[in-house]
Length: 616
Image 1 (cartoon, rainbow, N blue to C red):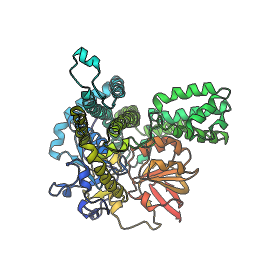
Image 2: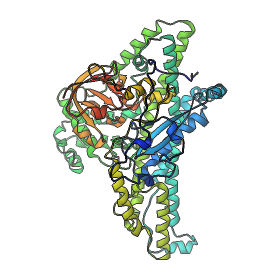
Image 3: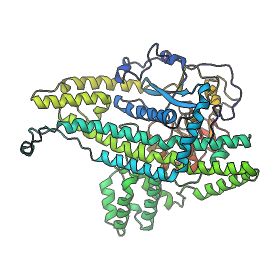
């Protein structure tokens, strides 16, 4: 595999360089003064740190809302671990890691390039390491799953409970000589380490998936200079992905409910216990409930968000969510609709395009085409599948354990709600734990109950104020050309797109430009979604407009006609999922969710990357 440091999508010559605002130019929302104190010292921009000389983009694809202090753990672990695989594991020739900062509660990133003179020296080691992975892909991927599931199982075994009034007499008899507080302290540290461990595993294969696709993409562009980006993407579509399994399970449950005549039992899915009891009382209900229980483990370890926030709602804890999706699938089945993904159609189209381009090649080029496309297709599913195991399953267990620890502090009077723990940084939680066990051990009052309530109230007001202001898509002056491959493929931050964000010139028809991420053209009323909690507002036939979509929004894709997002490239979750569901998509518009309002009639052209406001 080769990776050219100048790999880009086809882009026109860049116009005169303009700049985005600097961090210092953006006003602080009223009431958010002093926001920097909420986060670890190394996250906010600081005068003289050199950040003003770098280009930064906001990763609203993964972190679309303001961080509470504890929630930076996801961004810190994810971006650090992404960097280690680029820079220390795989030695990717043109790409080191990505610097990251928090500004006004949002995460900003700046790719770190490899100096041109050092690229060639990295190539032999890069090829050796990548070759090992691709030469042993199936075995290593099986090992990966064992490692990840083992981490999740160990995390599940951690428990946090208030300390007892006295050490059990059995501990006196056994000479244990410890008071039990060590279990809290060690358990918390282990929870953090296990989370960190799975984030390291997360990137073991992810960057390889992007590399395989990028290698095929680059080769296709070389031998077919005019080939559309979408044609290349279509050549790896139509595969089975575990990330789609939760949604597929709901469709199977809906189909079974129709077969058994249980439709009317799903009238009030907000009442979970009542719905399941009503199903169980019907003929065939026991069969349906058995299938439901089978689906829950592990496929309900799934969130309507993206797993990076402590408030994300998981299906296994809020079963009214999957039940409501099942209810809607039942309605659609009764209406004669097709609810399954158009997988066969995608495969037919994939094979047609492959043969169309294969027929133009021979000899070494044909062999290279087959090899690179086959490798990309093999690695492609992991680009989405890892989401289920890490962002959804791992983080679902993690946040549940964090809330369990939060309840220990509630019982000790440190704060009023289990979720208040999110207003502390992870290192402050360690300090608060020692404060708690010290007060308990010496028989005096801990400091926390007199300190944290007021401090949490102060921080809550700041976070609330930060949430009133949407982030700038980028900061400072962009480079003349953006060459970092992952920035292009995952986030859609290309030279052309960044200059489009900066352009004061609209098309003659006022169209919003983005990346042509999934083909097709659709018209419909816009539904602008900022938070996952708003998904229930989406109506049949609308066009979803969002900062970004989450892979777990699959049940909603059956209702909508197309998707528009602010950020995301050809290999973003939004692009991949929309292609697999056969929906037109335009990603990376920069400001689609703020330029379009709910109810406007819009046309989404996923072939050209244009969104037109037709009415409103």
